[in-house]
Length: 170
Image (cartoon, rainbow, N blue to C red; front, top):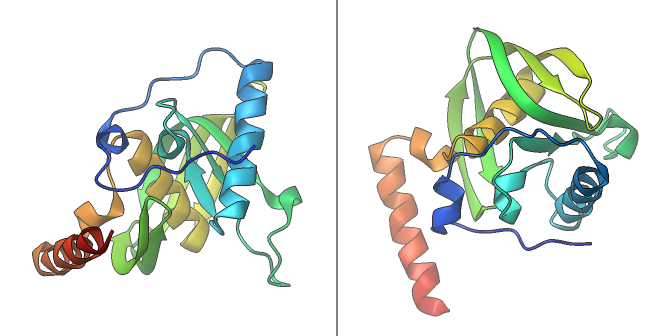
């Protein structure tokens, strides 16, 4: 089922998400719905809070070398904790909750992540470049933050101006 993606300035996007404690069929169905939603909206990552559910769950599905978004590469991340950060990378980010706006954001390039899968199994993942950027972007959502908070004053003013124009047209 395709879920509604909340967009800025919806206040729910600024809520801190709660830890997941039940790894049951309801969670599995919700993760499946998140995947369908992300693909339908042409995203590569989605946090639960973006579809109105404040739980610490996110999914990422990057495009492979053949430029295909293969479901076999889907990563479901529950209760993520970054245990290591290093380096720096600047990447042009966009967000399903901030449609049609892209801006460069600088983040750590290498991370180590501890998390749980859909069954509650504990996992660890080392990530760099785009995957590291995506994980950090989605974890920001779980903590009630959007990438536009990281873009600097001048670029943020430009964003706010564009948003006001867009809202007036509606």
